[in-house]
View 1 (cartoon, helix red, strand yellow):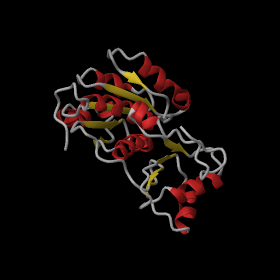
View 2 (spheres, helix red, strand yellow):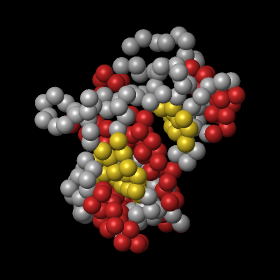
View 3 (cartoon, rainbow, N blue to C red):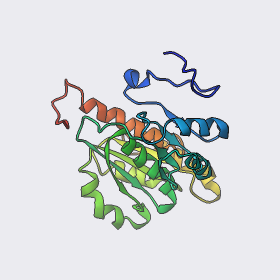
View 4 (cartoon, rainbow, N blue to C red):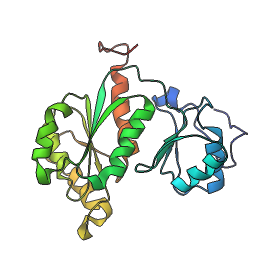
Length: 234
């Protein structure tokens, strides 16, 4: 791995990550100097031939980059952007992203957008929390038709346990920082998911939709391995 002298000072891309773990590097924008972000956005826009995912990207920074001619696919809810996406994945499997409520939209859509960027098929089921469990029941058969399920929920995060007991698919749970008082910025949701009575539920960090999508991608990449007799796309 060699340092790319053309990148901004302090930026050292992990160019070998895809070959090593099957996932490309992304740019976490929150906290980075604007000058570095503007330089990167100027280099990886549409038509540059280098797929790069930007997460936690403030819209005002993207607008500055766009003023200089860089074009991006940007979603203001998830704050994700890319100039170009990765090629379609070599597996036909799909991921269901299920959220407890519309307040979880930013995290749920970060997971869905990351999967889209990586080339995986995904379906988003929003506002399916257990306070109105009929909403979940109405889409349960559809959710179970997917190979992996990502559950995004705040407050008491009961959705992870309920859905974890209703599907045989791998479940990746994402606690969100949604909730009043004792929700403690997502710590209560995190604790609830960690002590779930549904066996086999995996849990990411608070608000980490990107990490959940990458975990799902690792699972799906196994299905595309030659030793697995699973249908793969052309």
